[in-house]
Length: 233
Length: 310
Image (cartoon, rainbow over all chains, first blue to last red; front, side):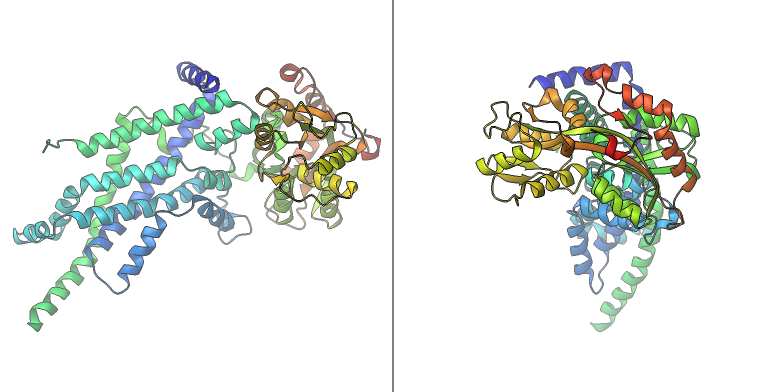
């Protein structure tokens, strides 16, 4: 318990003094996981919507793959991404290994199926009768989609929250493709692991507490968006 | 009945195509909403920009090294100094020596700092690395529970290992092909023992984590002195066996051969090797740890021969 207590004190101290190293790590965490979530939303929500609204041969298989992808082991994603990005790997010419971009790619791969999976469920949960009614009332396709997404808003924001959670809490892939380079690809999770190896438990605990605070703040903001204007039933 | 069904399918086909297009457009808006929500939340708007500013891509240098140089904090002191002097940005990849050497073998790193002379020699002989230079040493120590159930206190490394195996006392091995693991296996070999059984466990983790595990389980382990001192206040383990040539822990720096791998940063690798053996750097290495641990963690050795150590 004493370590957790000391960690709490250390976290407050680091936050109050604005420790440059910690600030850098947290900004990097937000930059990487925030961008990765945006990319994953760009891929996952359209893909999920498409899969929810269409019927085609092999759709069941594709949906199964997406659902499987929701539980994709991050360390496998990390390994495959690492192998592709190494200098002499298939994508080595891009020179992306051990950069924040590499981490964004890996985290987006982890988050995209989560977001797509939740989106499929959210869109399909909208009553089919409502869909027919929208069309019957003369909505064009644009309006139809817009209304549909508005209806599915709760579920889609839940998808974004889950995707962001998956990205920001990830450590295996991030350290593999990012390399945990100080001041460049060191994010909250990889820094925490390093501080434990160094024996600095207070610092590790402090970093964890700060990460939790930030993740909570972002989730709370998304939840606000999600719940905004909803009347109690 | 046939006609409406057909018609419906046509409509849904057409619909599905535009769904993709329009959905894509829609979600750009959604992304902006997300970014904005993060913005009002007090999180920085500088999301897209790197706080460090300029990123000289061609000046990147990948240093693959062992965990002990990072976990002890040594490279946190040396790397900024090197970057200041030369303008390179060093990407320190802390892996076990096995992985670091493997990265060198594939040309995935520019310069290596490792501590497994025998394994390194193979790479030197194969021409995979060049400019192979002795940097520093410290020593390995065998640590264990203070009550020392196997009675190894004061014994030499090999004798201590024999006693541990005879008593089947719990031993936590790194098991990760690191330099320390290689040293441990060499000691078992020298003792004529093939360690196996429930008393011999592999952690598969770095030195710091392995020490914590050994401490929690009241086991013995082999560690480099630097990491032990860094973890000392968190663990209940004592140094029980130390000293002797067989426990020397010798670090070399080497450049991955640019003639073998065209993509290697040759100038940067050479600069780092020169930096590590330069007198000022050697002085920093000799001073490192005096403040925090009351004793230096490494002995600088540039220019010496391996046989002169000990």
